[in-house]
Length: 379
Image 1 (cartoon, helix red, strand yellow):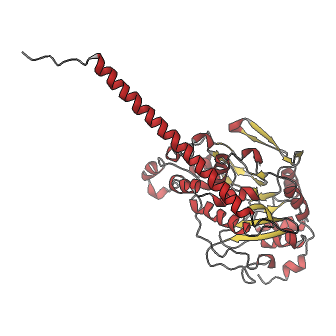
Image 2 (cartoon, rainbow, N blue to C red):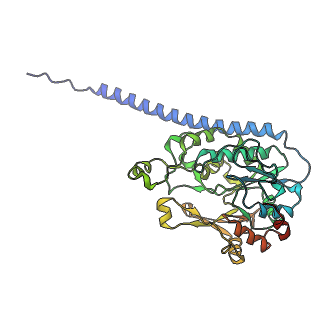
Image 3 (spheres, rainbow, N blue to C red):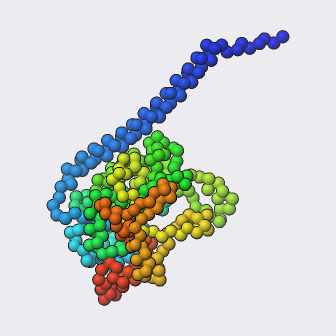
C-alpha cells in the first residue's frame, strides 16, 4: 500500500508566498533604481559638460548659423548654395561638411569657393539606417561647437535647398530661442526595442525627421551624450531589406527587429533630457513622401525627388504657404510659430535634383542669379 505524500502546511504556503513577494519587490526596486541611476547619470553628465564648455562661450560679434551638410560624397547642389551664401555677410554663417573619409573640397571637387576646405578633419564611413549616420551628425555638431560664435545649427542633406534668401532664413532662425525638432510619439511602428529599458523607457521613445535645427545648448546635449548613443548602437539597427534573390530567407529576415537610428536618436535624447518644452516640435525642412502601397510593402516610404518640371513657382509657393503640420499619432496639430508669432513652416526642402536647383536659381528664389559666373566654372 503506497504511502500518502504529506500535504503542504499553511505555514509552508505562507512562507513560500512571502519569499515570492519579497523577490518580486526586490526585482521592482532594482529596476526602478537602475532607471533612476541612468537618468541621473545622463542629467549630471550633461550639466557637467555644459558648465565646462560655457567657460569658452563668450564671444564678441554677430551670432552665426552653422550650416552642417551631411553628404555621401560631394555636394551636387553646391552652385545653388554658392549663390545663397554669396548674398550673405560672411560674419553671419559658417559651413561644415561631413563626407566620405579622404575627400577634400577644393577647385577640383566643388563649384563654390565657400566649400573649400570645409570638410571635417575626421570623418567616418556612413551607411544608411545604421548608427554611423548619427555618429556623423555628432561629429558635425562637435566641430561646429568649437566656434563660440555658432549659436544655431542647421543639419542639411546634400539634396536640400533653401526656399528663401539668406537674410530671411537668418532672421527667422535667430529670432527663435527654441530648437526646431520634428518629434512625436511612435505608436504605430514597432521600432522600440525592449532591451533599451530601463535606460530608455518606452514612454520617452520618439520619432521624427533627421533634419533638425538646434540652439547651442541643445547641440551640446547631442555632443556630450554617451549613454543614449551607446544604447542606440547596440539595440537600434536596421532590418535587412527584402531581396528577391534570398527567396524564403526573406521571411526569416523580416522577423528581425527594425529600427532606423537617425529617425529617433535626437528626438529621444531630448525627451530623455526633459527638453521638449524648449522645442518647436516640427522641422524646418520640407519632404514630400511617396506613400504608395507598393513602395510601403517592399521598401517603406521614400521622399520624392523634385525635378526641373515640378520645381516651378506654383510648387514652391505651395510649400511656402504651409502653416501647420498634423501629427496623427498624437492627434496634434502643430501650428507653425516663430518666437510665438505665426509663420510659414518651412525654410528648406528636399530632395532636389540639379535641374530643379537650376530652376530655383533662374527663378531668383535664393537671390540674384549670375548665370555667367556659373557657366564659367570648369566643372
